Image (cartoon, rainbow, N blue to C red; front, side, top):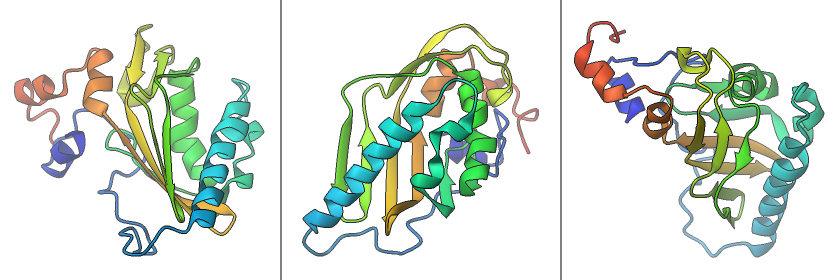
Length: 199
């Protein structure tokens, strides 16, 4: 819904990176019409799980480089984030415009409900309900000061593997729910101050 508002010309919260409608995979093969390749599916699932547990899980609260994303992400990696966060290119772009600000705002991120991961060929999807729980301790993300509130977030990620690395990641976050937990009623903000949130 936040992206629908953006497309209609409203911007209730600022974004650090360009906001776009997430495209289909660059390989144009997101619709599977053939039998699943079990070996390819297993390779994709193993890569995504290694990236989550060994890569992202290595974050020490200080240095993004310790996650060694170059072991998992292609140099031309595309990260398609939701409205309110934006889309970025390459490891540096993801770290500057998403991971860094997100981890500054939510430094104690934790897992949520039971995770579900599905792989089919070069693709993998991941979600949980909720996907995580964290405390809003840092200023700036979404143009908001830290609230100190513990929040949950709902996310589904879609990954595309290319060879031995991940090349694309489409990330869909329930931004309306997350912002509501941080004290921002997006629809109220648009209704009460339509001109102040128009681009």
